Image 1 (cartoon, helix red, strand yellow):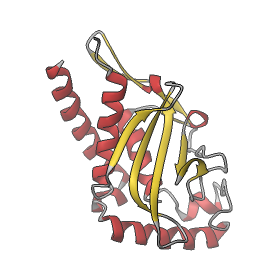
Image 2: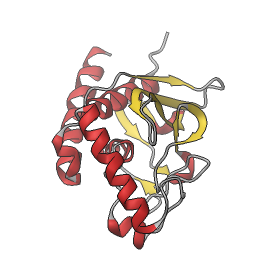
Image 3: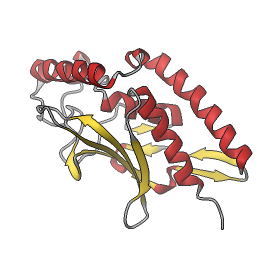
Length: 196
């Protein structure tokens, strides 16, 4: 039986994101039709509530793969990715997530693995909500209000997430976060491919 590298690699990516978010319990599995990967992060503090639930990231199965012994990443367009909370179909509460769950990405795509994993971390922790992003880039959804109100609400949720999850402090610095993720990814895929 051939090894399913797409899922193995998605699990590694989810594990790195979960670690950055303070060690959230997580899983990665295929959607019922087998065409998508669903990363699920458990015990995620929900916006506007004292409850915790699941946060999910959904993207095509073909995003991670191995060809001729080399790990590959297919650049991901924002329309191919979804962020949900509590259940598939309910958009994550975030000023830059549309009501159908797809993100509004600067540049429209994620071209590298570290960039994609960093985006998951920054989206789930709301680190990618800034004054520029809400006033210049505008909001994709009014779930947290619009303009400065969205920024205030997002900052309050950011603070709650950092404290409750115990996120790694480096997630507030995009460059440091990407470097850290890149090192972790290289180390983990080396181990995976040696075991192949």
